[in-house]
Length: 400
Ligand code: ADP
Ligand code: MG
View 1 (tube, rainbow, N blue to C red):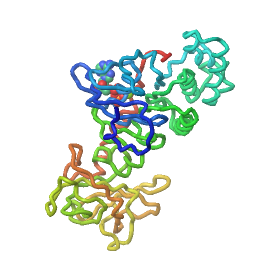
View 2 (cartoon, helix red, strand yellow):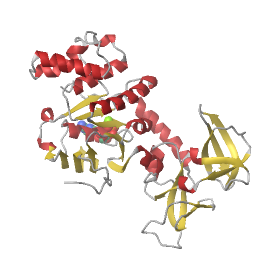
View 3 (spheres, helix red, strand yellow):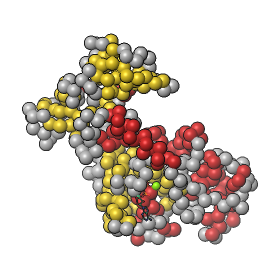
View 4 (cartoon, rainbow, N blue to C red):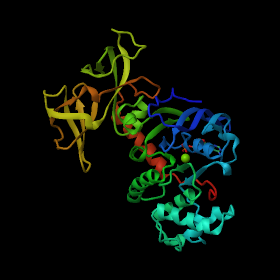
């Protein structure tokens, strides 16, 4: 069975997992609503969305720790939901590593193999290979409490890959690490996935993490997939206002399209764009759309040289660029990133290339008329802060 309608698959690569119409409710509340996607062999695929959107539940159904109410999960063409968790060629790494503090690194990694009564010699060889792959070749005799957070994370990964799974599931595995270590581990994990040549299914609520590591990102909200695509796709061509807002900073503004390749912003200024009318639109009418413009896609110029004129409301230095708010004369506040500073109160012009204007269909996540990108971003920050301050979930014991 193939679900090529989800994503045009021109890569010709095998789908190791195909998920169709997966549904799940807890206590009468539906948390997965017809989840449908496929995972290609050797892909680094990420489920991305805010806390509570159903990422872990999806992963736990694939792992076999949770049952589905309905739907199909095929693993290499076979019905995976009939296979008990311990017989699935799939291992999971959680945010809480659940390592055994009374065992050294070697024995932590060897634990599952010992239970399976794998011969001693083979255990030694497999554990050493796994430790070498995660960069802990010389750490076998160390105790867990002598390790840094990043090293513990590597032990947890070694313990999973020692089983030689076809698929590794990772549920917010870097959530317990500090920012610097997290950034390092992101690069290492991506490298590890390439070296191991296996499929990684990764869960995170951190959009930057998803953009850094993934071949494919699945953006979820309230148990529904909003968009599936490469990091570049979801960043540059978000399908709706929700995705645009969740993936990176953006100005989301309502507009109208009367004809192909032309959009009128809510402040009355008409811009060229690269999108034709959507098929359901009527030419000559004010068809309502949402538009997204990324802050880095604006050019700041002298007043009157730009298409939009306005006044600088604020400027904050962000390291590489300045984050500038410009209030246009027609009342829209635009967030602009610029490498050169401007002064608060200064009159400026803004320009944007037609192909940097992304046109989206209206959705229930559209901004309210008059509430522009800026205000929505402020709201999202609160949600993110909430999500990251959450206590890590427990998933009970080691997955051996
Ligand atoms: P995410 O991983 O995206 O944060 P989850 O998949 O963990 O989200 O949870 C999705 C929703 O299902 C949440 O509202 C959560 O409270 C609920 N949920 C998850 N697991 C259970 C459970 N075992 N019993 C009841 N509700 C659950
Ligand atoms: Mg979760």
